[in-house]
Length: 444
Image 1 (cartoon, one colour):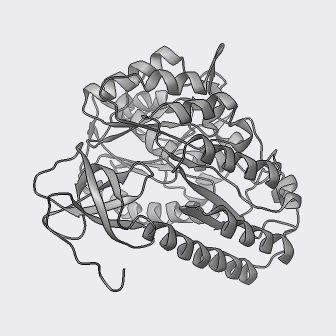
Image 2 (spheres, helix red, strand yellow; image 1 turned 30 degrees about the vertical axis):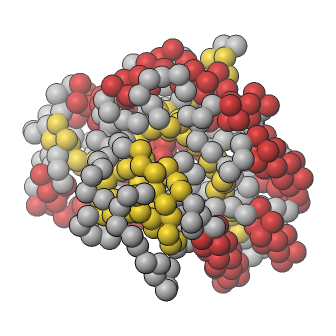
């Protein structure tokens, strides 16, 4: 059997980081990454279980990939990650052609499983442990300017709608010196931005050291120009973390701060651990601590028991908060969570209408906030060519706004001061100070 592996990733940044760990571990054991599924002997899908739609995408993709296995039975097909853990009891009933199913804490077993000459029976390994952090596994990072660094695994929050604690286990953090070593190695490899990852990233702790200590230490690593993190829990944003955000220029003035709902009644049923008043005070404190900071958030509509009044409270708060961006979803019950046992009180059509209303409102807010940058400079970390065509580059501002501008003098990894001349809801359009002038478009 060959040793060419093709891996597709579905879901959040944590899954992307896990895929880098998987490829790094396999590479250490002699496997090589294939350029496409057509070139692979082993096809892996690293999956998400947060929403039903994400799982259905994976099922559809696996059904497509079955044709490659039928054409060549030597091709092995496996599912990794959260969906594998969540549906471990009946995934093979639905997809009997799978060769193996591995949960998030079983990636070390992949080389031994793949070295087997025959797969008489599918392999299922889904044990969750309290110790596994993959601390000794060097990730196989893609070329680019941004490096993902997982600082912890698992979650102890047990929000009533969330499957994560059940598919990723309990919280455990990596040692701070080891993480600083990863940051230094990323800098030596040419990465200019580091993103710290954790299901509740600000719950990080290494003995007496906490997330604020990690941020401050990482900000001292030579070669790293920007530090971001996702996703923090509002109840864990301590004074020490706010002090680091205020004082360390390397820590970006942008925070993804999940809200989910602005109704205290719904927040309590979600077991979020804060009120809307506490959340709002946190936003104000962050804005005072770091002027110019911008926020994104998560919103769930149609949660069991959500009334029209609850929904309108969330809509009103979106207008008040002024998020730069919001990831909005209709509630999807996840088997095994507390909320899945409750009867749904919002039908599918109403959920769809509420979701559309939130998306349209946030698009208007995002456009207004983007246009407020017109006439102002932003510092852009160049990532690569823009989709606009030859001669255009794209990158992110410190506030994580996608910014495009014409230039033939700059390359990925450069920091460029760009004057914003135009904007859409999600993109700033500008020019380098001594670059060609742009005329604002009428429809941007």
